[in-house]
Image: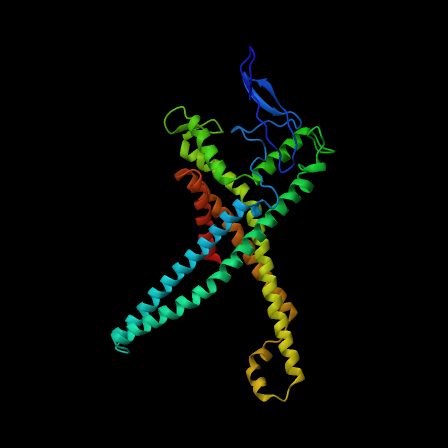
Length: 357
């Protein structure tokens, strides 16, 4: 809405902070001969790209809305199907190469190699297609668990740590016991943690191109002339690093949950088998089959040490993945703002996961 007056026109932008439904009135203040936008009830200025602070923050359980649920299901199904197919074709090529080596060594005939290849293709294709639905279902469960954890962490950070949500902030836009500047800083941090890298990439790229004083050149934040691509990379690296903290923390939490569950099931199974052996020591055949288990008694301290080692490895791996994903998102934003940030983040994450997991 534009309010006409003898002064320069004032654009009033309405928005919302976090997921609270609050009506806000925007007022304008003049500073350095430019129009500054300020949220009437919170005293917070709009971002340089015109966003309301924390505008990108998703509502709780928003992933279960029909459109979001459909898109996430298609995305997860496509990723797991393509992964299964790529693994199948890779293993098929390896099997055929092994059979060709046997033919070259004279151990089998070319006809036998063809039969072995056909048998392998039929057996492995059926086996992997049978497993694919459960694999997709598990991936969907994991995806929604991570998303729910993300919203939960955002709630904890916003309500109890940064105090920018609900009753944690005063009506005047300040935090009890703190000044208004501290509240603005808290909102700024929360905004960084909940940014949408896709939208941030598009907005940042557009702003930098509008600020070019010559083709491909802008003035950086430290006052030096630099290329637009370099400045976009630096800004998007910082943006992706902040925006990926909570998602990677949620993923790390899920991985630790899976780790503890797996160790718990294995531990309880070994204890059960030992108890069964103690109740039936006369079965010599069972004792022979369980010789390896007897050589490996249930040791709580060994299990705890193993869990600690795996936990440290997971934490280190996710930390490196966070940095690599931020680098990939920044590089992708330079190549193709928007989707480039998404694909770059995925490539950085999966590449580190393949190396360290």
